[in-house]
Amino acid sequence: MRSGIGHMVGAFATVLTVAVLTLLLVATAFPGHDGSAPATPRPLGPCEPFCSLRTTTSAVPDGGAQ
Image (cartoon, rainbow, N blue to C red; front, side, top):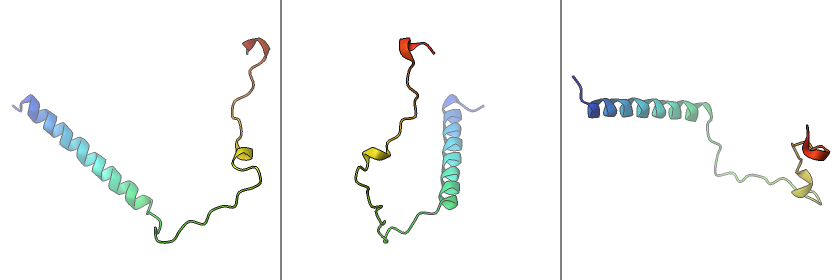
């Protein structure tokens, strides 16, 4: 019968194997871009970056009731 430490080592090895396989799967699914070509920046407008901020929450009604 395996000891408690043996079970912990086995579980750790299983988790590590699954993590490495997942990392390899994601790395092959999303290949990196070429780092030698610099990214072209987008020209900013007159009020950027502040005019592009949008609120995603609605205003609270008077009294706080909804």
